[in-house]
Length: 126
Image (tube, rainbow, N blue to C red):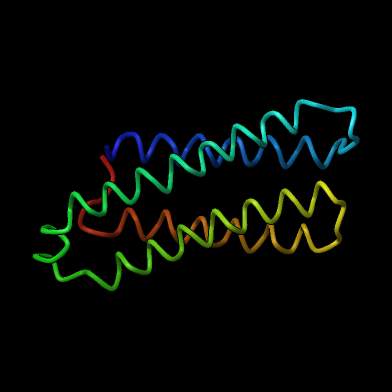
């Protein structure tokens, strides 16, 4: 399940960048490709959240033995906020809101922190 989670994260980040660039280039209603990719990205959001929850539940004993409940709790919060900010960035960019770039910067910083925290924690990356 950890491999599904990591693959979903990587694909979600790649799709986020692609959709961001496509919306930046042309956000007209006639352009269907960004909308389709945005819907696929939403599917990957669900995969990331569901697989992350399953990985967390499956490794509860290891988390208890390592004594890192707070770090994993923070990683869950950062992960959920990352997904929310990624979606908020794309919706605001689609509506051509001036705050989209600021939210995108916060989202990228939070994604970096979340991935860094994920590699630091005892489960690590495989």
